[in-house]
Amino acid sequence: EVKEAPWGLFFMRENGRRRKMKMKKNEEYQIRIDDMGVNGEGIGKVDGITLFVKDALIGDVARVKIMKMKKQYGFARLMEVLEPSPWRVEPKCQFHRQCGGCQIQALSYEKQLEFKQNKVLGNLQRIGGFTEIPMEPIVGMEDPWHYRNKAQFPVGKDKEGNLITGFYAGRTHQIIPNRDCALGVSVNREILDIVLDTMTEEGVEAYDEETGKGLVRHILIRYGFKTGEIMVCLVINGDTLKSAEKFVDKLVQIPGMTSISVCINKKQTNVIMGDTVKVLWGQGYITDYIGDIKYQISPLSFYQVNPVQTEKLYGQALEYAGLTGNEIVWDLYCGIGTISLFLAQKAKQVYGVEIVPQAIEDAKNNAKINGIKNAEFYVGKAEEILPDYYAEYAKTHNGETAHADVIVVDPPRKGCDAVLLDTILKMQPNRIVYVSCDSATLARDLKILCEKDYRLVKVRAVDQFSHTGHVETVVLLSQLKQKPDDYIKCHD
Ligand code: SAH
Image (cartoon, rainbow, N blue to C red; front, side, top):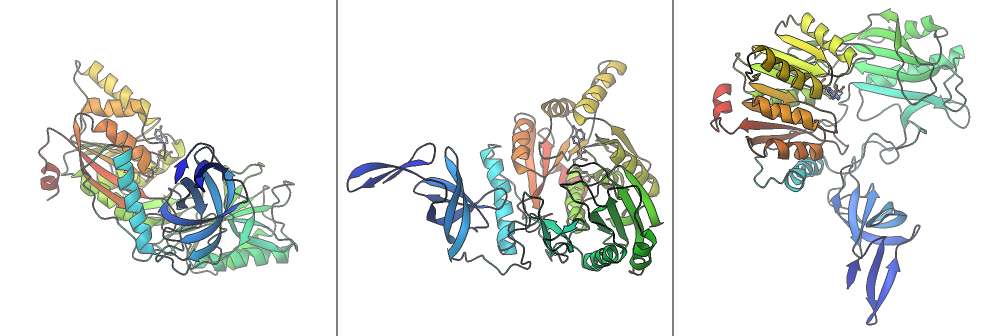
């Protein structure tokens, strides 16, 4: 008989007597992993105590070592897989355990998708309190490798003093030398080889985080999946790149090279990019497309890193919005206006709101280069701009309520501010489309929205970040007064 108790204590009956036990650091246990945490870590129980085990997969039986105990649970390290999970596969990358980039590469892709689907479903049930969840099948990738269009490689030295580049190990700044990341594009390797060889030949030093000395900090590479355009930006701890022409001469040989620049960052912090970019060769940006919309992307611009899945995600958001061409639409947390411009093609008028001024500059520029005239953008907090607009509208329209047909939100992980949700409910749009990167805060917000006037119509998860624990979700809510199939009719 085993009973749970706080602080990793548990009680066991031994020869008819109750014994108090305590799990301690460095002790080893055998465990069966029967669940997966939000970051892809394995979860199992030993004598009633829950343990979180990084790199252990659902279905594994493993030997683990306790690293840290908390009140009701603990963290353990995977020492040995005794019976492998039926869903274990051969990982593509030999660094998959140390590297901070991937968490569940050893899990079959099918099972990854199932895990993500269940994670969204579970949160909507537990946190949202929903019982009937109209969930569509998760949208996976046809080929879940080499999907990232952007990578930032730190540059440093190994113990022998050789230049290295690759990725940070999970939660540290130790560089794992790897120029062949399985999530990145293949041209990364060629570019990294050229940059490091040239640094060696020209005696250009790597930046040292501890001393603050040395020049080259990071190598930023961006690739336009639709255009084949390539950007290389070296982040440097100085004003100029020594022997810049040597770097340029070699990099321009790569087909597709479009933009070569340096970004100046002399601050001794963890922030990768600085504020100033100097173009060494070509344009200051590359161009790429999501759907039919063209984007200009500079080294400092935000741009979705998985363009293939982004197109599917925003396509789904557009479908849920059910536009016919007559609608007034708000796109809150609009970033560089990706969703806004998607929607503008089918709506009467779109208003985008975003807190980062530079992103709004990009959004406006992107509207312009696409000839889109029915999208307007505002800088500010969604939870201030929309309530202000609502109040101002009533003042100037004899107390009339500001109307919107569709409101789209795509907030960061912390979800929507309560004041914003309140204003959305006051405005009573026919449909609300919620795009989310954290299904826990999504569930919390949906609970509020669906308390009275809205109904959950559709939920769809999209896998934007294969081999990690992240999952994106898009949800359609319909105002209860709307006929249930209204949005479908609109779409047809
Ligand atoms: N749909 C966007 C990405 C949204 S990510 C795109 O495709 O570009 C979430 C965005 O919300 C980020 O751009 C972030 O800067 C912005 N943001 C964060 N807090 C905000 C707030 N309180 N009000 C408005 N925007 C905010």
